Image 1 (cartoon, rainbow, N blue to C red):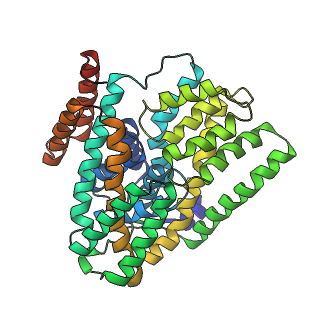
Image 2: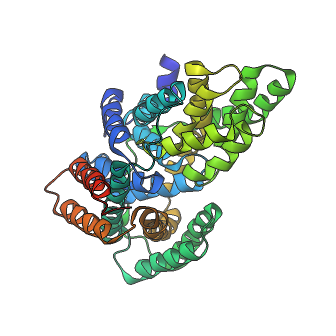
Image 3: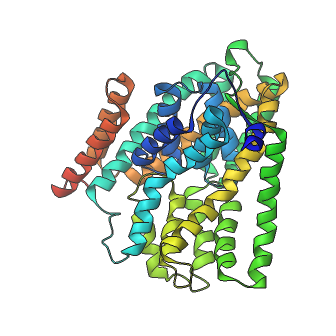
Length: 409
C-alpha cells in the first residue's frame, strides 16, 4: 500500500526489514522471563549490545517514553525499537514476535484449563533468579553510560530511594517528570550525550491517525457495548484494561479481574489458576488476556476469544507508541529537551535499580543458594563470554535441582 509507505518512512541511514525484527523479537519472546523490568534488561542486551540497532541514550529515551504511557511498557518498548528499525511493519513484527510464544502457551493453557499449575516448579524459580542477574547487569551498564558524573549519579540515587519509598505506578511518572525538571535546570547537554536520530520516523499524519483511532475506540467501544453485541463487550473490556493502566504487568490484574470475573465471564478460581500459569511463561504478562478470552463462559471464547482479547488489550499501547513517536522525535532534536532527557535517563537508572530490589530480588531470592546462583550468572554476563540464554538455562537447571534436593523453597 503506497499510502502506508508515505505515512511511515524508514530512514535509509538505518535500513531494516520486518523479518529481521520478527526474528529478534521472537528470540526475546522465547527467553525473556521475569516480568517487564527484567524484559528491559533482555531488550538492552539484544538490541543495544548484540545487534547495535540503537545506542544506550536512545534506548533509555525510549524506556522513559514507554514508562510514561499507559499500557504494557516492555511490549511498547519493543514496538518502538521495531518501528525505529523497519517502520510500521517493524513495529508489528516486534509485537507479534515478542507476544507469540506467550500467546500460544496461554491460549493452550485456556484450552486445557485442567492442566497442572507450574508456578511453583523449580525451573520457574530458577528463571526468576536469572532475571535478577539480567536486570543487575543492565543497571550496571546503563549507570556507567547514563549517570557517569556526580550530578546524574545523585539524581539516580534519589530516584531509587524515592521509588522504593513510594512504590506505585504513578510514582514513576512523578519521578520521570522531576528528572526532566532537574535536567533542564541543572544539567548541561554534551555532544557525546546526544543520541543519533532514530532510524525510523513516523509522519505527523500517521501519529495523528494512531491517536485518533485510540480515542475513537476508547469512546466508541463502550457505546457499541451498550447498543448490544457480545463481541463489542469483550473488546471493550480488554481494550479498556489496556488503555487505562500505568505500569503494565501486574498492575493490569485488578482491571482484568473487574472486567471478566465480576460480570461472571470467568470464575475466580480459573482466573487465579491462569495467573499462576502466566508466571511460568516468557514474554509479556498481558498475554494473560489470551487465556481469559479462551476460558470465558460467554462467546466469543475458545481460540477466537483468546485472539480477540489479546489484540484488544495490546492495541491501546500499540497505538499510543505510534501516535507519540513523531512528537518524541521532534522534541529529542531540541537542546532544551535533550537537557531534560539527561535528567530523565538518570532517573530511569534509579527506577530500574529500585525495581532490581523490589519486585525482582524480593520475589526471586529465598535463600543463600539463590544468591550464589545470581552471583555466578551475573559474573558470566559481565564477562560477555556466554549468551544470556545460557545463563537462563543454567539458572533454570539450578532451580529445578535445588527444589528436588530440598535446597530451594
